[in-house]
Image 1: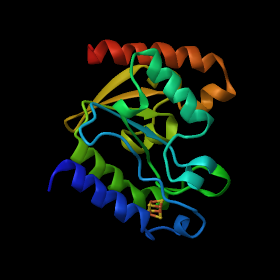
Image 2: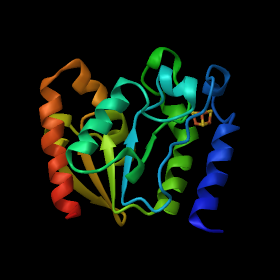
Image 3: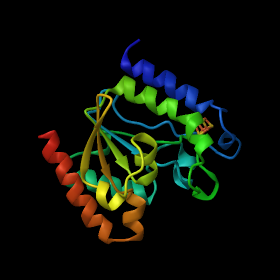
Length: 184
Ligand code: SF4
């Protein structure tokens, strides 16, 4: 099966998934979107209200900021794959529970295996701690991390930059490092 078809199959499974209780309160599961051969894959925390309503990742205010940051390094939303640790929205956007992550993480692992991105960008503490272990964000941001044959890059979640504008400049600098590494 080609990468595009494999990804479609995973996404159909996610849309019908009942592996954790979040399926009872979501409107739509949010598998993620982007090219099946993307060089860059962005991993956030979980869908929010807009994402739940539309079934699309990063379409709210955080999404707009992510797009602005991508545009700042010459990329468009369509150039990258965007997803999150959880594929269904936790009520009131609370932090994902451990059992929900355990139930859901295999979907992300399968997406990574199919897409085989050059760099996986972890947005914020929940993505970082669940993919590579706990890091202090103030020390983690702007750093690359190699593990099990994968290259990760750590930065803040766009929602943090919406709450605290100083993080926006820090994220712009982080994205510049990403551009330098990708060398495009
Ligand atoms: S969060 Fe993940 S495991 Fe839970 S219902 Fe949604 S897709 Fe399934």
